[in-house]
Amino acid sequence: MRVLIVEDHRELADTVATGLRQDGMAVDLAYDGADALDLALVHDYDVVVLDRDLPRLHGDEVCRVLVGRGGRCRVLMLTAATTIEDRVDGLSLGADDYLPKPFAFAELIARIRALARRAQPAVPPVLSRGDLTLDCAQRVARRDGRRLDLSPKELAVLELLLGAQGGVVSAEQLLERAWDQAADPFTNTVKVTVSRLRRKLGDPPVIETVPHAGYRI
Image (cartoon, rainbow, N blue to C red; front, side, top):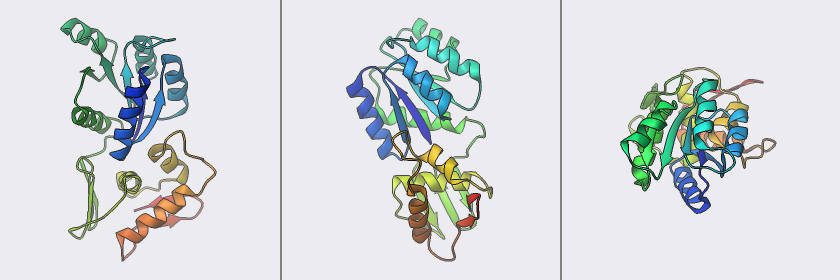
C-alpha cells in the first residue's frame, strides 16, 4: 500500500511516516499543498492523508483536485478544528474520511487500511491462494497453517501478488506500490525482496517468474 502524508508540521509528518512504514506501508511526504499535487500526479496512491491548513496551496483545493481527477485514491482529511461544521465542510469537498487532531495512531492506521480496502479494485481483508493466506489487517501470513516470519516489505510484496488473483505483477508495479519516493528505480531491490520472500514461503515454490513480464502467485 502506498500512502502520501501531506502535513506542514514536519515533526508530526515524519513521526507519522515512520510509524506507517513500520506497519508495512510505503510512505511519501509533502509539507505543502503544491508539492502534494505534484506527487499525486506522478504516483498512484491508495490513500492521501491530507492536513487541511497547508501553505502554498490550501488542503481544501488539494482535495478538490484529487477528487476531481477520479481514480482509486482515497482522501483522509486531518484538521485541528473539531466542530461539526468543519467536518461537514471537509466531507463536502469529497474527502472519504475525516480525523480531528490530536488522534490516536492506532485509529489512523485503521482508517487508512479501511480506506485502502475501498479503493478500486477493492482488496479483501484476507487474501489466499492454495495453502497460503495473508490477513491484511493483522499483517500476518501463514502457509499450511504455519505463521511466516516476513518483514514489512515482504508482506507488502506478498499482498500485491496475492491481490492480483493469479495475474502478473511487474517489477515496476511492485516498486511503485510497495516502495516510496526514496527508492532507486535502477536497483535490483525488487528482485532481492522477491527472492527472500520466495525462500521464506518454502516448498513447493509459489511465486512464479514470468519472463519479461513480472511475477505471479
